[in-house]
Image 1 (cartoon, rainbow, N blue to C red):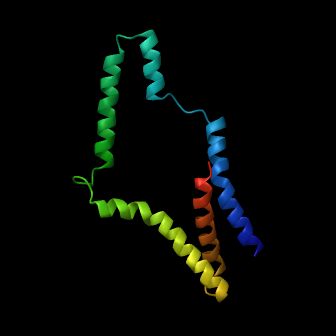
Image 2: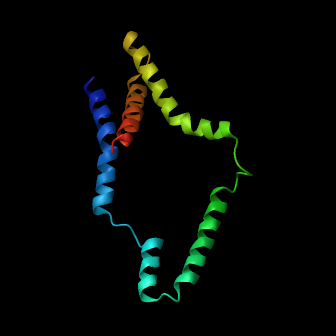
Image 3: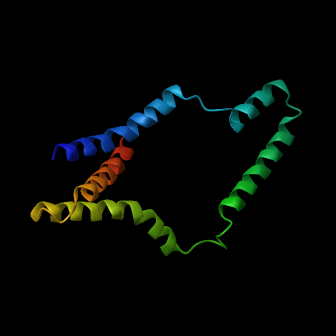
Length: 127
């Protein structure tokens, strides 16, 4: 029972702590916006060409990311994609409730995985 509490607290606390550390200490590389701002003040004659290049790069990235999608996916596909993680959390709660009613349904590893999944989902919602 103690390991379950540790897993739940770890899953709940680790995502916001990780986000905080990443925002506070890990400085992002040079972004397109920072470069455009610098060019606007130092070399404004290069800025239009830079923006055109960045637009082309973004378009290429979008085409590569959507390389297996032809057209707009159906609304039910979009809805299904958006409900996968919350549905796994709900199913996890149901399985944990069944395990509480009849101990032994879930082995320790499965129970731990469900607890970490559910608590990390809630932890990722803490801002």
